[in-house]
Length: 114
Image 1 (cartoon, one colour):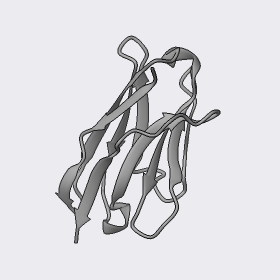
Image 2 (image 1 turned 180 degrees about the vertical axis):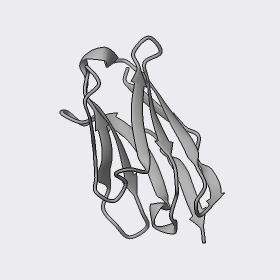
Image 3 (image 1 turned 90 degrees about the vertical axis):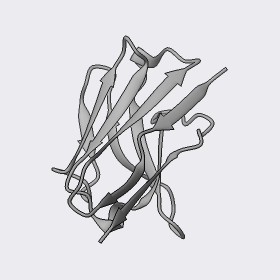
């Protein structure tokens, strides 16, 4: 049974930092490209960062230079370090595979106050 469990969100002031974690089970984690997605109120879900099975990373322009995605294959966990947060980063953040999207987890809310 596939499970994606996100954590680490919260309320932070603009300029602050948060680190999100996502524990994955039910798939061969190490073989999958993993991504962090976000969905702001009234907007479509978007992919903001992805990391390949061997560590290649890619970012949306809106977060490039501020966010860093990483993974620990021994722990089946993917992380998102978010620095210099902006109010426009406010959203529910989700992790998922990139190539074949699985059932979504509950996400973790990130709220950035100005």
